[in-house]
Every structure is written in C-alpha cells, then in structure tokens.
Length: 389
Image (cartoon, rainbow, N blue to C red):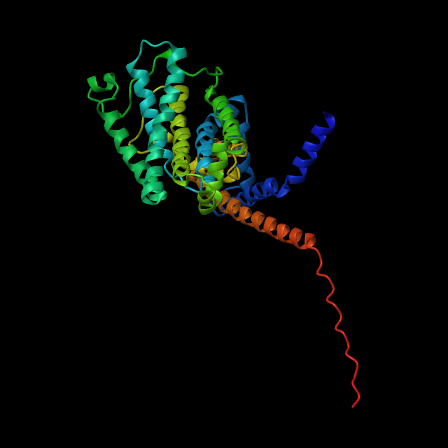
C-alpha cells in the first residue's frame, strides 16, 4: 500500500512543472511594478498605495470576508469559462448568463412564498443554473450547427439580457412598494428571510463561497475523470481527430457553452440569495453583476484554465477589487487603476503561458532526440582490386 502511494506521489511530482506556478506569480509581480510606475506618475506613493490595498483586502476579518464574497461569483463564472475554453469555445456572455439565472431564481422566490426555505434555496439554485444554461446553450447551438462566431453571439446575448432585466425590474417584477409611490428604481421586492443563504454573522460571508469551491472540485473531476470531460477536452484539442474517433463534436460544443453558462447563472442566483436578497440594477449589466461576468474570465486565465487553479486566482482578484476602495480613499487615485492592473496581469499571464508552452515543446523535442537510437554506421565500400591489362 505504501509503495503504491509512494509511486503515485513520485509520478505526480515528476509531472509537476514549477513554471506553472512561478510564471503567473511573476506576471502578477510585473503588473504591480508597472502599476507602481503609474502611481508615481499620478503623484502617489506606491508603497502607501499597496499597503492600503493589502489592508483593504486582508486588514481584518471583515475585510477577508468581503474578499471571499467578491471572489465567489468570479470563481463560479471562472470554472464555467474553464469548461468553455477546454472545449475550444470562448464564452464572453457571463454577464448576461448571470442576469438570466438571477431573474429566474428571483422570480421563483417571489412567486412561491409559501415554500419552506430548505426547499426554496436548492430549487432557486437549480433555477439559476438552468437559466444560465439556456442563455449559454443558445450561442452553443448557433456555433455548432450554423457556425456563428460564439464571441459575437454571447456578447449579443448580454445586450438582450440587460434589456430584459430593465424591462422586468421596471415593470412586471418591480417592487410593489416602489410602484405605489411611482418610483423608478429598478428593483424587485425583497426575498423572505427564510430564503437567505446561511451567513457568518456579523460579516457578509455566506454559504455561496463553500458551494463555489465544492463545484470547482466537481468540475475538475468532470473534466479529467469522466467520459464527458474527456470528450470536451478532446474536441478542444483537435475537433477533426475527435470526429474521426467517433466523438459528436457538435454536441460537445453545445454542452461546453451550456455548462459554462450554467455556472454563471448559478453565480447570479447566489448573488441574490446570499448577498442582495433582491435584484437591483442601475440599468447596466454591471449594476447587478459588478462585472463578475468579465472578471471571471480574467480569473480563469490566471488560474491556467484549470478549475482548481481558478480558486486562488478568484481570491486574488477579489482581493484586488475589494482593496481598490481603500486604495482610492488613502492615496486619492481612481479605483479604475485596479482595472488597469487586472488587464496588465492578464497580458503578462497570457505571455507567460506562451513561454511555458514553448518551453514544454522544446523539452519534448529534446526528449525525442535523446530517445532516438543512433543511425547504424554505413557499410564500408568494398575496394575492387585493380585489373592489370
């Protein structure tokens, strides 16, 4: 038993590449160094600024809780993005999928107010999951069967979801108390207290964080330990070879985007039942999502498009977003600087991924050359004797 475990551990460590961990960290450091230069140009002290950023995200237990709360939707969207990218499709529709999932989950909670909480909360999570799946599945069908570019279709679905949200929150789903006073605030009524996800009082940390981490582990098992995950990854690696091997490529594309959208929809439902307890917006997608649909893509890229790697990546970007508020107050610079830092991190992470893949390709070529047996010595040419005439 011990020898088997030791063999497995050695096999795992032999495949472990330190560059997989080191390069993203170096990319983050490079982004922070460039950010320091930008802070100097803005007349701010980088040391004071980054200290404020750290204290805003980790300064006390409430700050840590807020960081985890901010990271939760990023993680859910990120693991969905991981599934899409592994299937060689790009999902830019996380914002719209979050909105639709939240709308359906909120409608359920406001319609069936006589359900017990232990029934409503799981049902609302399933409803949000299904709503996001529908919104992600439509671009998947368009991509698989009509060759419509999924980037364009998912962005268009975002716009449709925003208009649908604005219509419902100002009309059929508006808070009755707001309607009575002719208020134009686009928000729904508040959910019953029984329908709130359990929370760690006095912070805002709720059970959604644990759900997100558990789902990240399950997605890892799905992608690397199941037949469905193997098919998705095979199609992502080579659609033609997968089709030749008998894999239904079109179905895998649809499933990839459907699952990607489903996790974003679940993120929307958790935002309502764990944090806001109602749907409210300023008329834009980010008014409800907080741009988690886009930031989740950043987290997935930083996590090397791996569901487990997306967990610390989401935590990192959640910390940067939460700490940005204190950074802005202390050094009087726009909090949008954090958006710039996020973009720089993505640029360096993508660049480091290219370096890592080139290094792996070079190492593979070197291994093949070393393992290739040497050519046998060519036979010496026979010397014909001279014939005297």
